[in-house]
Length: 286
Image 1 (cartoon, helix red, strand yellow):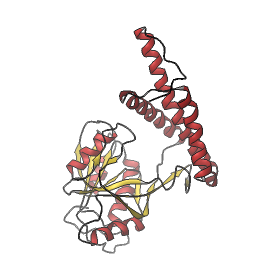
Image 2: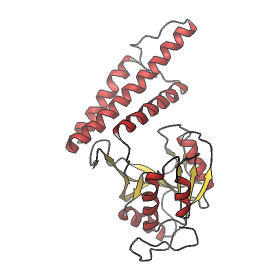
Image 3: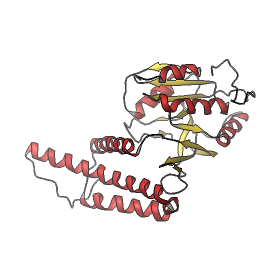
Image 4: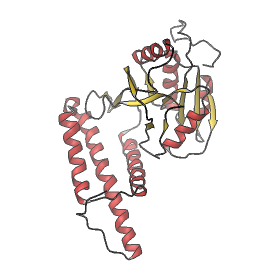
C-alpha cells in the first residue's frame, strides 16, 4: 500500500481511505511473519504509509515489505529503543503507530483507530491498547499474557521511544488514552528460540541496570521471581490459562532471577578483577 493508493481488503471490497498516520516497524530476517502483519495493516485501512527500518535482513524481508508499498530504510542496529525512534523519525506523519513484525491489528482495534481520527484531533498525545499474546499455541487471556497494555500510537512531537536497548517504552509527559480492541502477538518461534531470546534480553537488562547504578542483592534475587509468580499466577489469574499460562509465567519469573543473578555475577567479577572487597549479598539493592 502506498500513500496514494486505496487499500483493498482480501475480499476485494474497498477499505476506508487512509488517515494521516504512519505505521512504522523495525525488522531483521522477519519474512516468515511480516506478511501477515502488513496484510492486517492493509485490511485495517488506517495508514497513509508504512515505514520499515531494516537491519540487514538476509531473507525476503525487504522484498516483502516493498510488495506492500512500504518505504524501506537500511540502518545499523542500535538497540530496540533507539532503532524504533529512528523509524519514528523517518515517518512522513507526526502520528505514528509502531508495530512488530509478529503482530496483527484486529478489526476492532482498526475501528477504534479510525474513529479516533474521525474527529478533528485525538484528545491525548499517546494511546495504549491491549496486546494478546499467543504462547504454546494458545492466546493467553490472563497473567502476563493479557491485557499486556501496549502504548504504540502517539504524536511524535509529544512522545518518543526511550533509549533502552531492551524493554523499551514510549515516554511522554502528557495524559495517555486507551483504545478498545486487541493487538495480536502471534510469534511463530519455537520454545527453544523463545528461551534463547529471553537469555539475550536478560543480559541486556542486567547491563542496563548496572549502567544505571543499580545493584543486585540476595533479597532481590530471591523475592523478585517469587512475588512475580504470586502476582501473575494467582492475582492476575494466570492459572486459568492452563499449561501455557503456567509456562509463560514461570519463564517470566526465571527472567527476573536471571537478570539479578547476572548482575550479581558481574559485581563479583568486577571485585575479583579490581581486588576490592566483595559485595555483601545481603545488602539491599538500589
